[in-house]
Length: 248
Image 1 (cartoon, one colour):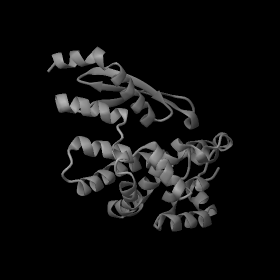
Image 2: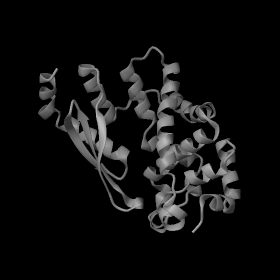
Image 3: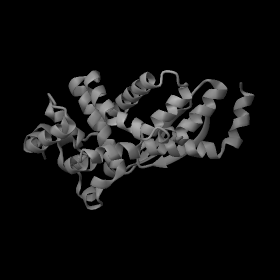
Image 4: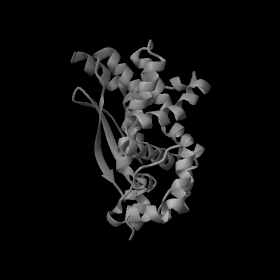
């Protein structure tokens, strides 16, 4: 089995090609290589089953901060709820997958046999997660300011093209807005269960507020499960809303 440095050495030409598409040269090309390794490939081919999930975790946080930063400076007079809606309309699976396709990220992915056979290179969930891992790799390689420039270059064109569309309200944003308006507090999301092999996991998440479970959701990623939990909470809002008001 290979290590990430060995894999990076084998794929050196392709990694350099991707750097050109990104407009970003990595000081540590191993980070770029790791960002491209799906869990299915890591499980089958790499020592220690290394993959891009930790980079995805970092990239998700960096993306939220960077897009929040960008929106705050562009729309400084907007209310918190409006900024939250705009961010949700920008930082989501479909948008990130589209950005990944724009730089042909799918062509550089390292996938296991099962994902390769099921056209994983075209799956929005895999492409969006890999894009987040790429952001995480950039951040660890060159810091926040350099990564912010790349993120701005990707997201600012969307603001010009979709000023109305970015106000799309997803379930998590809607639920948070309802609770913050009434209680000035946001709900929290908790991972209840995680099942299945690394390349085909199912996550169960609950959304909680004031020690009450408002809804649960299941999905192939934590983000999808969180959205499902929020949607479930909104569907059953009548059953818990009055109880929360009684606890004020």
